[in-house]
Every structure is written in structure tokens, then in C-alpha cells.
Length: 84
Picture 1 (tube, helix red, strand yellow):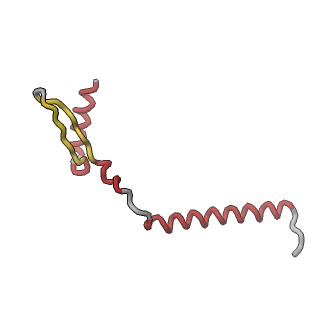
Picture 2 (tube, helix red, strand yellow):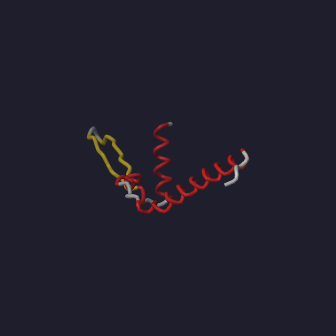
Picture 3 (cartoon, helix red, strand yellow):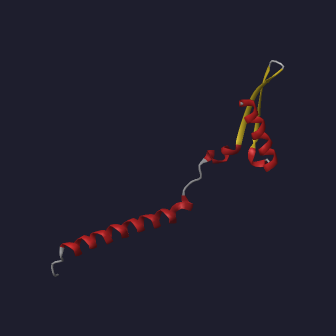
């Protein structure tokens, strides 16, 4: 094979590097659905409220995923009013 000029060799190396990166990205995308789901991903919507009612400690657990937008807005308003 003929000798390549330094610029051609550099270009060839860059093309190989880029091609390898694209191949790796394609592998990650192809395997994305095969990855196991994280077991705690459902827990992001769980909200625990701890409070005292007539000197009795209470705790309530809410699943925020089942709330309407209006209910979430009310909860946000009540929560932020208590901190002001």
C-alpha cells in the first residue's frame, strides 16, 4: 500500500474514532430497552407528610401521581405558606 500523507493518516484516524463512537452510541440505544427498570423509580411520586395533631404525631403517605393539577397546586400553596 502507498504511504499516506500525515494529514490523510490523521483524517483516517479521526474517521475511525468517530465511527467507533457512533457504533457505541448505537449499541447503547439498541440495549436501552433491555436494561432492568430501577425498582425505586415508582417511589418518586410518593410524598410522606409528618405532622402533630393535638400532641399526637401523625404520618400520611400520598401518591402524588394520582393528584390532579389543582390538588398539586393547593398542596404547593399550603406547603409554601407554612415556610414563609
